[in-house]
Image (cartoon, rainbow, N blue to C red):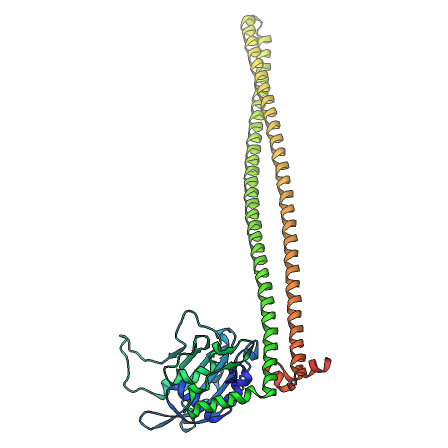
Length: 452
């Protein structure tokens, strides 16, 4: 028998609009008898980037416990057939926790209604092989001993919840319990080869089970409904656009990441070169300090030479005084001759000192020439550094170009959203439905439709 594929949002919604069908599915998932259901307002149904990728519906359910008592709980169902971020589920869950309408009226808002979340996933979760995963609450003391006394408690139930995770790709036709039978209508291995919108099931497997036959009949009616088929085609087209867009975005993001990595690497190289230039500047400053120190030493030596010149002049004065004495002492000519010879010796020493001073001045000239050479080398290094900085400016301009390309990509995405609005409008969806589906402002949707 051919039935509509309930993985499609429009079919799934149509299926759960039947109270008996919804109670049958939820009773099997909860493993408890759901005696009454009420669909709740869903103000947060479009949280996320692609509103159609996560379908949400909430119920207030009255369940019968094993002891015959009844309890009111919230059941939050989220279905997706694409891999999606857990953040979307958490955002919606947070909104439910914050909703004052989910408080128990008999306690004047002191406690919240206990909640169970059901996730019907069209993709696998990691390496978990079980098709249905029950995540239950447990309470422990400091020593990791299970606490049961006083539980359940409305305060604890207000702050924690249980979850049921169904991995639809893990359903492979094996029916060993009630839940397997109910979930078998989601088994995607039963898709028709030429049409993924329908499943081919064995009606005899549900013979004698009135609840399952009602589900099958409702899905069979959906498969024969032309409006339902049209809506499934719209979902296929919409997801095709989303997948193409996401693929393009992933490729662009990968290219941007690679280019950003290259820019970071080049920035690191420039910083390293800047460090080398700073180190060289420090070395040049040290050399300049050494040259200044040598200049100081040369000046000190010049001062010493001047002091020696003064001493020589003083000695010359003394020699002149001695010459006067020699003239006065004609009788002491021999002694005078000796003094004159001594003066000649001193003059020769003075000439030697002057020659030594000339050598020191030549040495200073050589040092000054070396300093000029070092300064020219420093100027060459500074010019090289300027060249490197210009190259860095060029790289930054290239990065700016890449950011402009990214802006162009974002504009393309906006264009795709306008295209999606037009497609959904042409497909017959109202402005309000499009706004809800795409998580957009109604005025903006109507403006886009009017512009086109």
